[in-house]
Every structure is written in structure tokens, then in C-alpha cells.
Image (cartoon, rainbow over the protein chains, first blue to last red):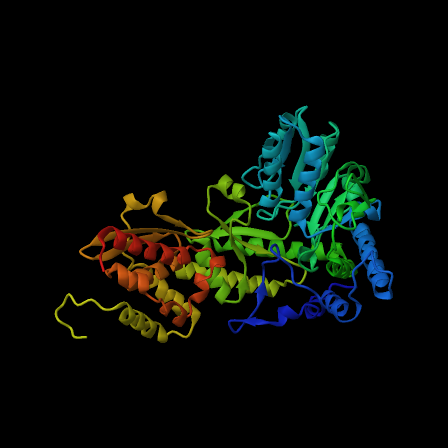
Length: 406
Length: 151
């Protein structure tokens, strides 16, 4: 399929909307992406015709739902090139996936005085669960810093890694700076010391082809709603050997083998980590979203988004009254900036009334703001359905902000 | 109510009606915002020495500092914000509530915010501190009422 942007936009009904009597220009894709018709129809059809709880029922609907759910697992497996379907655990999202690993891995492998390494550009979801673990176990959190242009200073890893390092957690694409981090290099260095690496793919899964086997990460996590799927869906990929060894992070139905009051034995992978009735309709619709993305081709999507990123960054730069945060390359789909002398909240309020949806504030990455000594930025984040025309409208809105406040 | 002399103070309700009629001429959002920017300059600015953590009403995005002083039965508010539109709205809140008695402030029903279309700015999720600011203004009124036993 060729990349026909006009045809693609028709797949996303919300993009035809107007807000404040102006065409909606949706540039808040880093927060969540809009849903294409196949995903919307899948969720709807399931509620209308197919709903039934999975794994337990002996009847027709339950068997069909179980089959669809397990096929969704295979779709995710293929999408990220995992070795086995049972390495794919469905979760409510990236945050839940990271919390799950932080708990299970922490229970089994982290003791007093041990160390966990994260980066200075993590989303709070990849900081706080590790901090909670460190507090629980009296372990220490170490941080890989980044340079002002937004590049991770990976050379620091050599001194940060110690015999007490138990795990490294790193964001693949920064949700604030857009930097595409050299996760392969970090993983190589970590594996030389047998240290596992968790990659937060919340901002890469929708933009970049992912091959977890080539990357050789030990855990890869992402949210469904950021890759055109439903909210409340997410994935925890873990290498089989880790998932076999780790204890479950939640107890309940479906994750057990034999339950007695004396002792309970756990179910096999992946069910060990999916306690209770999962969001099966969400997972099945997530698979639909991944098929949609695959049908367009992630390479074509990445090309399209990259052109828009460079077009938008250059236009912003040419205005002469903008400070960009995250100028390092390679980067993906995120433009973080300030209109000089203007509070981002004021800018966001005015842009909103012009139909431009951006996000303002700290983007759940306060340490990044602390790095630059600022209170927040304006963030425009791109998706496959954005157009150069929308970038132009966005630039006009930024100019308007400057005339009003500058 | 008759105007006795030049020190006549408008009631909270009268000020609210005045603001609503000022905003009635703007049907475009940008004009409304431009007017708020203009109003931000009328804000009785808080003494810079009082721009301290204790007086900070912390929202997630824009910050507001608020101070209250009790003078002869009424409360006088001063404030500041780092965002201009927030500052404009703050200046309206102060215009409505400042120089009134604690009871009047406690019982004030701030209908003008809704009427001039700025209600979304008061939703807790907007995190601009305005909702907390109104709560704080009323808390000051309650505190002064308790302290001085004024009616």
C-alpha cells in the first residue's frame, strides 16, 4: 500500500472534527494516538456480537474469544519479532508493565546495597517504580546523564556499572526530547556484565520497526493506546528465561495451576503473569491496530513522520524567537520548545483556541525540566496521519502566540 | 442601595455583573484573551518579599502567589502569576473579592467565571491553581473571621 495521506486520514473519524469552529490539528500524539476505523469497529463488533470471557468457558463464544485473544498475542509477537508468543504478556499499559517488572525482578534479585540504573531523560513511569523498589530493598538508583542537545552520555555507563548493578532501565525514544537512544550499545555494555536491560518503548513502538531479538533487550514494554490501539492495553515482552524465573506480580484467577490453602502452584507462561480476566477485547483490538500499522509499513510511516519532524523543526527555528529542547539526532516525532519569553501555559491556551492540540508542562519528565532549569515546554508530537499543512497551521499559531505575549 | 459618598464599595454581585458585561462584547476567543492580557496589568501585585513558598498556590503548570491582609473589617488581596492569562483571571478574582468582609467572601457565589466562558480554567485537571486559589481566598476569609470575630 502506498502512503496516501488523504486516504489514511479518512480512516480516523476524529480528524474530520472541528474544535472552536476550526479544523482540529491534533499534535498531541505523544500523549495518545487517535484510532482508525478497523480498531473502532473491532471494539464495537466484539461488544455487539462476540463478547465472552476467555480461557474458561466451554461454549462457542468463549472459544472464539480465546482464539482471537491468543492470536492477538501472536500478532504482537510478530510485530516486535519476539521468539515466542508466550514471551508476550498483556498488561494495562507501559506503566503497569514497568511496575510489574520492578516488583517481580526486585523481589527475586534486588537486595540491600544493590543498584538500578535509569537515565536522566526517563518518563516518571520509568523512575518511580524503581525508586519504590529501591526504598523497599534499600537499594540505590543511579542515573545516566544527557547532554544539553539531548544525547545520552553513554560513556558514563562504564563508571556507573558496578558489581552491584542489577538492572538498567532506559527509554527508547524520549517523550520530551524525541531522542532515539542507542539502546543496542547500552544493552551490549550491560550484557558484558550479565546485567539485564528493560527498554521503555512507549514512544518508539508507533514510529520505529522493533526487533526485540536483534536489539537483544531483556524486557520491552509499550502501551496500546500510543500505537493506535485502545486505552488500557499494553504489553510486557520478556525473554523466556526471565519470565520463567520471575515470580508473578499479581495473584488471582487464571494465573494458577493448583490452589490449596497449603500451597498454590502457578500456571505456565504467559498465563502466570495475567491474573484475573484480562482486557481481551482491548488486546484483540490492539492486534487490529498493529495490523493497520503493518499494512501501511513502519518504514513508510517513519519516513513520513521524519519529513514532518524536520519540516516543522526548521520552520520553528526560522521564526527566530523559539528555543528547541532536544536538538540531537537521531530523533523521532517529538518537537519540544518554548516561545522565548512566553509561559508555555499561555501559549497552549491560545493554540488550543486555534484548533491546535499540543501538550504543555513537564510531560511527566520533571528531571528533564530540571536539567534545563525550566518549568515546562510546549510539545508537538507527530503521528502517521499528520500533514505538512497541519505543520503550517501550527506555525501560524506559534506566530500568533508571539504577537499576543511576546 | 444608594451611593452615599465616593468610598461606596460595589457589592460582589455588582462587580460580577460589570465583568460579565465587559466580556459580552467579545465573541472571539482571541479578543477575550487579549482582554485578559490587558487585565493582567491591573493586578494588585504582591510584594516581591511575599512571593515565597508559603504563599504559593501550586498548580501543575502555572504558579500563583497570593497574600491577604485584614484592614478595618475587610480583606485586601494581592497576587501574581508566572502565566499571563492566569494572571488576568487572578486579577478578575481579586477585583471581585478584594475589599470585602470575610462573610461576603465566604458566601460569594462566583458565577461570572462560567458566564464569561472561563469555566474550563477552573477544572481541577487544568492544574493552573485557580481552583485552589478561590479555595485559599475563602480560607483566608474564614481565618480572619475566626480571628477577629467579625460578622
